[in-house]
Amino acid sequence: MTVVDSLTPRRGLRVLITAGANGIGLAIAKAFQEAGAQVHVCDIDPHALDDLPAGITHTLADVSRQGDVDRLFQEASAMGGLDVVVNNAGIAGPTGGIDEIDDDAWTRTIDINLNGQYRIAHRATPLLRESQGLLINLASVAGRLGFAYRTPYAASKWAVVGLTKSLACELGTDGVRVNAILPGIVRGPRIEKVIEDRAAKRGISYAEMEQENLAKVSLRRMVEPTDIAAMALFLSAPGGANISGQALSVCANVESL
Ligand code: NAD
Image (cartoon, rainbow, N blue to C red; front, side, top):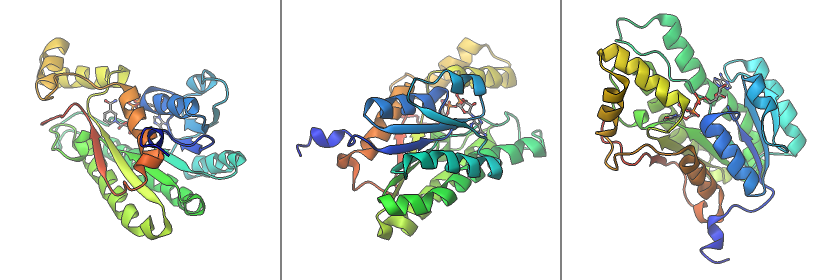
């Protein structure tokens, strides 16, 4: 195999992606399908699931509900095993000072962003051991930097990095790799809402807030969902076979938040 060939995953990979009906998860699902993989996704948005490209199978499932996760693995078992699992589901959580946010918003953020990844990893591990597979956890640059007024989100994403590094140590001798991808500011509706909320909190305009955010990015630009998908494909390709336990930023170099 040439080095160039080693940059593409082998065809026929069996891939499970959480929150795969929109945004980054959808970009990852489409990229794996283009690379010849069998792709199964879950999401809580039934309409977006109905609109998935033909051939991508799905389950209506919320990663914060154990019963839904059990049903997801039941339905995904039609693929006959799993080679790659992408723990993508994550919410932005509340924006506010630590003494302002409410307990339920804190708990919900941790329950989806961290506990959701645990629930999936717990169920996926035996299958990944069988295939010597790969687990990819979506963290964030907020998982390597402090993030004022977004403490629940940042705390959950630092925890995702801890989960990733610990599982890579634990499962490496079984041939299972575990990595985190840390996106920066990814173009799409989610980031628009985050900028809106932060602008309101700071009492400045949307344009000023966006400008301020990009001033902290060395390349002065957002990244695209397809940039995240490209990293997921590379990690799944033979060229990525010796990458494990890493927290890989795809962020145009976010210097601070
Ligand atoms: P998004 O907000 O666009 O949501 C994507 C999908 O998640 C939606 O289809 C939604 O229905 C689904 N979803 C929400 N809660 C769910 C749940 N409990 N169970 C199953 N599905 C659920 O998200 P995104 O921007 O594509 O982000 C994907 C991942 O990347 C997240 O973990 C996020 O924290 C991380 N991330 C995103 C950005 C960004 O700028 N967008 C930056 C850094 C990290």
